[in-house]
Each structure stands twice: as structure tokens, then as C-alpha cells.
Length: 71
Image 1: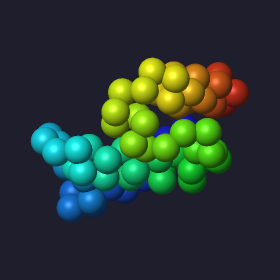
Image 2 (image 1 turned 90 degrees about the vertical axis):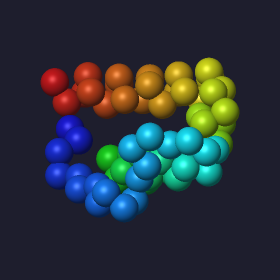
Image 3 (image 1 turned 180 degrees about the horizontal axis):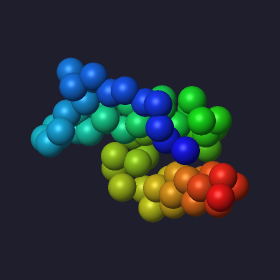
Image 4 (image 1 turned 135 degrees about the horizontal axis):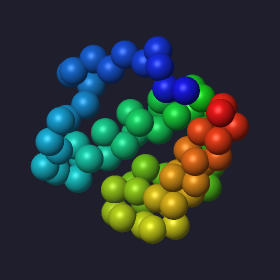
């Protein structure tokens, strides 16, 4: 399902300390998810970084549905 992605080390922060680093990591993940047809129109990366439970649950639910379709 998620094979075929290459993440250059300079594009993400392994241990993000600032809000901006966390936001950059989430944006990168969302870009990868868009490549597998994830539509992020109902939330933004900043909502996820801020810990918005609804935004996080939407992403997790989408991944759950995507995983179940491919089984």
C-alpha cells in the first residue's frame, strides 16, 4: 500500500522540536497521502499538529479504509 516512497533525509525532521518542524513533517506526510488519493480538503496540517482530535481521526479512518480495500 505505501511501498515505492522515498523520503530524502533533508526533507523531514526525525525529532521535530518546533511547531514549524512538526508542520513540515505533517505536510510531507500529507503530500505522500495525496499520492494515494487522500483528499485533505476537510482539514489542514496545522490542525493535526495542534492535536485536533477530529482531524487526526479523519486521517486515521481514511488509512483504515484504504488498508481494508486493498486486502
